[in-house]
Image (cartoon, rainbow, N blue to C red; front, side, top):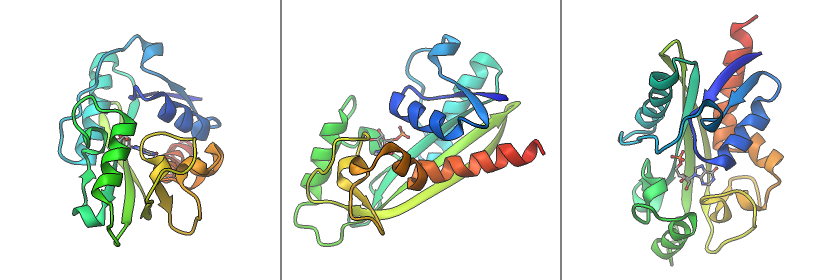
Length: 194
Ligand code: IMP
């Protein structure tokens, strides 16, 4: 089976993506390859950050690898926080800080439309290829559910009556922004070997 390093320090993502790719790729974490420390993500687009993170791993290992970058784009906030979703409430903020700030900024707002967008950058022998997944939904007025991470308790995807945090992981994986992007990656990896 093909082996890829996933350039993330987020154990929730590692678990989500390893589960989806279980049958077609062996995923190695950064820790398994002896890599630690903060991976820089200083670009101003999701594509740029995904490339930067994957290149960081490639430069240190020479191995095929991939990275993802995700943004939550809220219409009433002019597309914010977008590429800055991780640091929305400031440097070194927690998921809870971000959710609290979002609930505050959206208080009384009628237009609650938002989307999660993920871009994956796969580096094969250093050559980039991009895969994108996008899910439309809305920002809830309070937290619902205990699962997931990040903005999951306040994001409800269209055509569902529950938040991401209320879904079993298998369901979130199947329908989520990252799930859709990973499905495109799987499609590419399985077809290129046939
Ligand atoms: P990242 O740069 O891809 O790690 O994503 C930026 C930020 O978006 C994260 O710190 C989370 O707050 C948020 N995020 C990414 N993916 C998800 C998700 O699946 N659910 C909820 N929040 C997410």
